[in-house]
Image 1 (cartoon, rainbow, N blue to C red):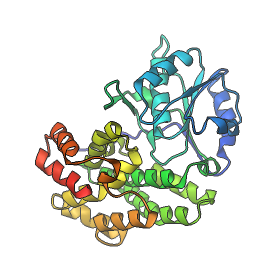
Image 2 (image 1 turned 30 degrees about the horizontal axis):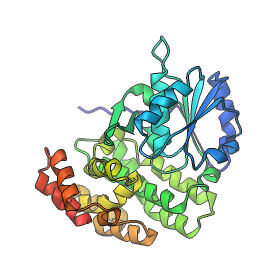
Image 3 (image 1 turned 180 degrees about the vertical axis):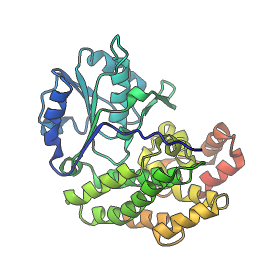
Image 4 (image 1 turned 120 degrees about the vertical axis):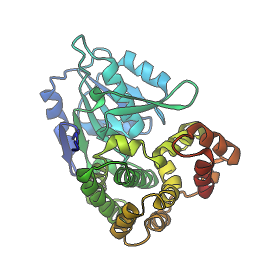
Length: 337
């Protein structure tokens, strides 16, 4: 016997101009005071959301805990939280919404307007950087956002390299969910469709950076990639990336670019049948197909470009050792140098 617990935000809007639904969503939630969580690069563009906010909370890369704490203080009294940005802004908003829960334990409703493909908006978990500079996280069903708005027009504001690297993050979600242990037929179908769509549409986004329709295609593929969020987030590429990402200032999307094909090659010997299906979906040897896609998109492929050497990678491998030995993990890191 097996079970699948389907968890997604209650409402998902998509398509160019879909931010027009934001005001109606806030009215449905009876939110008369709105706190906006965003980034410094987007704060000047927030007027495009078309709503008045009572306070604006700025969050940096990897959601530093001190900024999240300050955001909780700023958002007191808000009837809803609106996040506008990538995974850091969305994760910070999720944590703020839960920490402002009322006496009934309910989190403040959260509407997410993502501007990257990292799909933090789909998970009942949130990451942040602790005071020591290490990546940490929390899980709570109340972290799941109420509404997601995928607006292709707003997505055009995102720099192309950031957009494409988080697209590889979405590919990472799909691959690692498909390779997760256990039975998950619903996720398998969605993950393979996400992979097909990402491999097809990401190069078209690079070729047509001003096409909102293509960005919507990317967003839908990213959505499909994350129907098994717990297993995807616990996948080897994700875990290894988080171990070096916050510590060395490497964005989440980039860590997937650096590690995913090497993790896939490592896992191929352990699950050849599953990897064969991925290869059929991608049209060739799956790890090699990912490497070719990275080259086509002009994305980073070497950890050494971020000033990280073998000593730092050995430390990361030793800290992660358990199911996989430190030497095995170090071997993957070395392959990505």
